[in-house]
Image 1 (cartoon, helix red, strand yellow):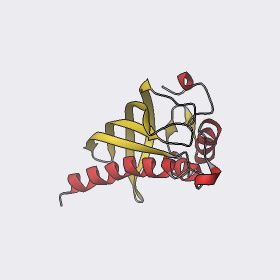
Image 2 (cartoon, rainbow, N blue to C red):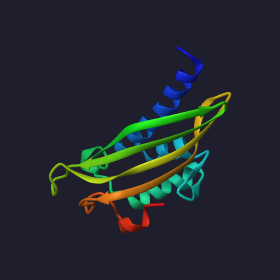
Image 3 (tube, rainbow, N blue to C red):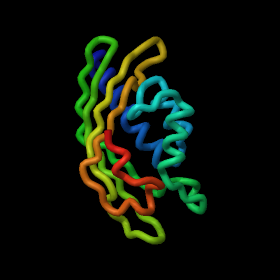
Length: 148
């Protein structure tokens, strides 16, 4: 496998890892994943984890997860030496005892990355939510506060 292809796959895996962690309700893990960068104006692993805990409902009776699936779609990754950018789309679906399975948010991610001896890591993530569905069972805040 060429070096550039391996780099693109490593960056793409970070995109998917984010989705896996948030769907598991592992906000500390999300904070660690994004903590070396800027997440919508928030920096540091603890602060980023705190933001997710303050904004995203989790269901203790279902493993303390948000009962969602974040689908990361159409990732386009550009690598330039020790830095990279990625743009992708996302669709979040949710099902709870009160709402049927449905899309609740779709939008775009714009990410930047860097590489050091430990590998690739996020340096920034911007989220633009383009459409909201019924987020009453997902968010603990007014959804208009999230896009940036």
